[in-house]
Image (cartoon, rainbow, N blue to C red):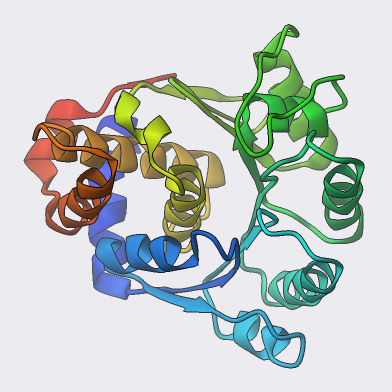
Length: 266
């Protein structure tokens, strides 16, 4: 299916199917992640308790994990949820939020990757570089400069982990180790809003819930998300109002707007 039509078609599929997207996610951005999934037309659930994550993953269409507000207990619950997701055969999306900031984050990311099947690994440039083995330091949860070849790092990580790798930034990169897509949509104001990265992960998880080709799903998700941001930013508004406008834009996006604005390079 050509990429110039897939993004809207997958959004329409989400609106029709209303898939359940299970999250164990960042407490700072948990509302925003739930709302962005709801705005797309899907159904979010934020279930973190070890006693129910297995049951919840079994009825979901995708599982989103985000280590932004990391605790040991949360990671153990993530492992249980990911195991259940693997048994059901649904995609597991891991946001390696803050990887490279502390040894604990690096350790727990590797534990998750080594112990469970992760379908999509998502992070900013320095987070992905760190998970790929480069010596970089992440500034909290914000990206820092990466001197290595980011495309090669992402490709190597995708092949090593047999996963789709997503690197977000001014240009978003998506690769499964063999195919590469660049998404040029989005707006600079997104860097001034807490949670846009976490929301991107939830959007990717929502598209992955309806599209088995995860490279295509992630690319389409970022294109739709970026187009919605461009539309929302047309008004002269600040970060808070932009975020509310972003939800409205995602809710009302139509085929004409997506296909006129999306910018995907293969």
